[in-house]
Image (tube, rainbow, N blue to C red; front, side):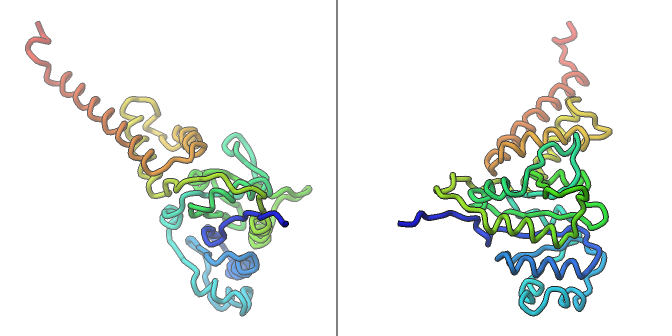
Length: 258
């Protein structure tokens, strides 16, 4: 009797191209999505979105992917409804410590994809994703190469999607609940940054720099919507206490002066 294999839930996956330069790469990406069973393609702030050139590379078979393609002006808006973001990068360094091999990550996405919307994020052809874009990501992946690490974006897309498409588990995947989406997380991070700046835990002159480690910490925890409410409730309580202390110092009671 053959053993049942468990695979990623492809209908919960989307490819996101951030600021692609060439319509041909959008078309090639649409074709790669069709090849690997991904129906959702999102394009953010494209430099050129010439539909004729896109369709020429997409070919007739993937016209439906192009027809349903979503186009956004901002990355935060495009990612807003997703619960898990995978960023792609060829560069590593102190600001990018959680880079994983694409094959290993494909296995991890199987349980997450069962109840969560996952975005696979690719950057512009000339420079890839910058740190300000990677801040939305829960994890990063890289594609192992030889001496020359740079890949055409559509080539990178087909490699990543192939690994996800073929990844399987011989046991039922561990249960991963519905996680907080990017809209919920970003509102929490903004609230948290304001609160931590008030108590001088982070430098208010450059909060994003100081928040990066906090973002990484929470990304590892896979927060749920109810966790967001708890954290923001703690922030509101800290803010209330700070305001009460300010009032007490500004307008001290008579007995405090005796």
